Image 1 (tube, one colour):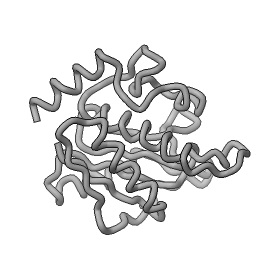
Image 2: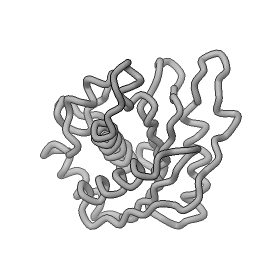
Image 3: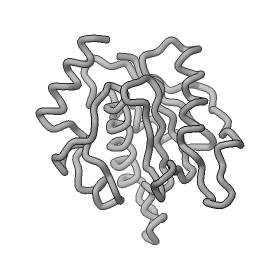
Image 4: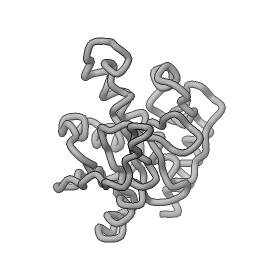
Length: 181
């Protein structure tokens, strides 16, 4: 599988590189590149009332990069607060199954919760959410195992609790999905 990581708006390149490495470590026989150019944040994604960006609007723009690049998956990484209707926020969103996904670093930052910045923790959380969303693009749904990376994170504690890898059952599903690519 070939994954391209795409910056959506201004995003720390070091975090992008860490996500790239993390994806290659978790997904077997995967090539992961970083798209050189940054995608401009779509203005129509911003909801003035909520002060957040609609993730599905960003996801549809990421799809254009999928079409033009010919890669298996494109993961957008942004630093703005994302939401979907009926939820207060999301850490990310993906086509399930599909080829496009997006994660946000905004609520993965420790300073969002009033703590001191922690770049190591930000990278750890970012990799977990990246793996989770790419898992969705392979057709995986949320797992009931709270330690599995595919467990739904309702809050940052759920993200911190889970591992960056798949449980045995989800791992088997990933291997089967990758065989079909």
